[in-house]
Amino acid sequence: MPRELDADARKEWNRLIGKVAGIDERDRGLLTAHCLAWSRMRKASKELEKNGMTVLTPRGCVMASPWVSILNSATRIMETTAAKLGLSPFARGQILTNGTIPDESEWDGLLAEGKDAVKIADVG
Image (cartoon, rainbow, N blue to C red; front, side, top):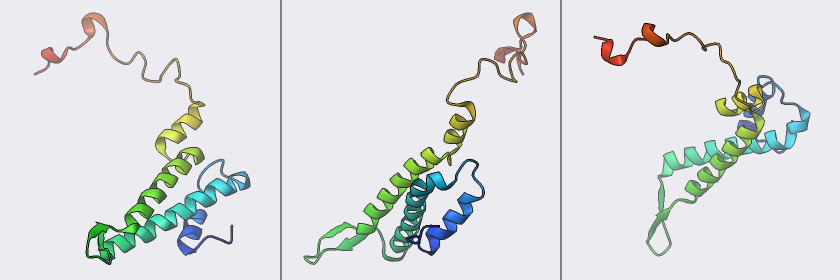
């Protein structure tokens, strides 16, 4: 486990390293980036919850809290790394199918065709 990970990032590392098929030491950099982004996202969310989405400038103007930008950046990093690591349902599907759409499905042929087909207008 990389030393630069804080407590939240280490928890995310441990959660992912044993559960996601195919992730190993070769993915260390990408997984580290993902876990650090997770930790930053959590911290930014907590700060925004505690202090609100806006801050006052020294001149008394209202502006977006810097934590909004940190949260948005961490979220983008997580989306990118999750896709590359196969952590989203779509990415897992792409890995399992090798990015191709199968010619046949287990559902093929289960719907009635021709005179046996039920039309929506025929129901109820």
